[in-house]
Length: 307
Image (cartoon, rainbow, N blue to C red; front, side, top):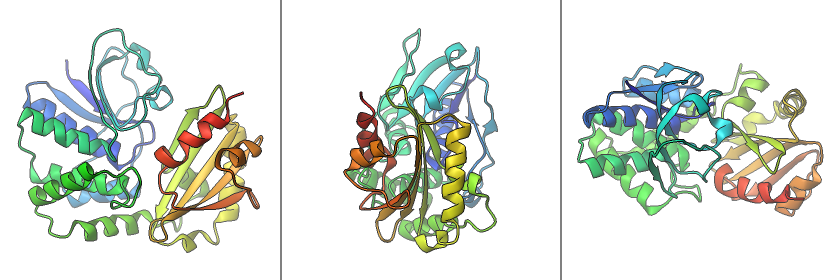
């Protein structure tokens, strides 16, 4: 039986590239594996795969009775709907532990680093498997994406070292230039609907029995949203109502200014304000230095929902 390597429901570059890299590694160590994805790719990920000559992984949303090696999450809300019927053989992730449980022992590689692909590189080193140049290239790009080219507070010295190692394998002399090229692709929003922008990098969370959705868009110049914010705010509220969420947020991150404007739609916005000790103005707030949903939003917002 083949093992499917697959990331979360709204794939980003880390989840897709780690699934591809992990599938190759498993195959090289004698375990048949197939890379998969649960959803459509965003423009940045399409750019990365095209740059290094990869096709999209297999689109697959049902895993009942299949062996599954999870990449880039362990939160039940990001898993396929039939996860309880799948055979989870492993998890490789860099987030907090989520609600996934298993009935059999499994392989776990979970580290507090900036990107899942950083951990996958350590798995290659552990198994003494050589990384092909194209796979090194997509892994490098995923780390640059997740760490916002080393600007994110989630970035560690390990991520930086591994990017340099992967760049050498991939034959990339200026990985910073590649990173900026990726973020320029990420900044292209013209002609994209408000809903598609909100859902481009969106994750649902259960915060003390309150359903919360948080999207993030990382761009090189926040001014591209000047004529879009009203529509984004209105559709964020529609999404909140449609999905019966307590709160929906959209983090608009300017990687050059190293901060984020956050749009908030909520049943009770005072919870968000309490979490960050701020006051919303027109349902928005600028947070200087905020680049990471994982490290700078969720750990503060989740406790604010405690009764």
